[in-house]
Length: 174
Image (cartoon, rainbow, N blue to C red; front, side, top):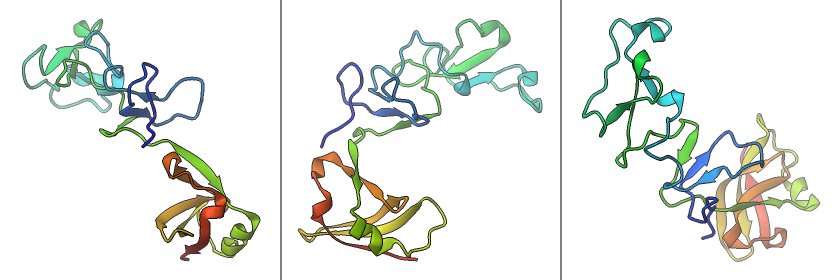
């Protein structure tokens, strides 16, 4: 399967989810996602100061485990009592806005429906900008529960090398 790659060339296991801009690669490998020298994202920081939270905590939030192995003080924020947990490699965890896939992320491409195929689903009411359908292919295979967006396209794995002509019929449910 074709997988997204990190800038270093390795298979990406992390994806930055709010990735609307194409200005940088949103796919990152496990080695590049973080290092022990990184400060880490503030979304993973914890505070011993009860007033650092709103509303304030009743008790300070204290780390568990061994300092330097399971957790550490956040560089440049130790005086404030800010700490973070570390992964098995001694690195701060990445931002909570990253998704993780051990086997990497398949490359997908848009497959646009023909005008005739759009006609097949035009009368299906949809609450959202997508409709869930089964795509029956001429080779007998079925892509089940596929989301067709704006009644005009769906995403398919690049490795399948499907074209619009491979679609036999589209079955949707209201």
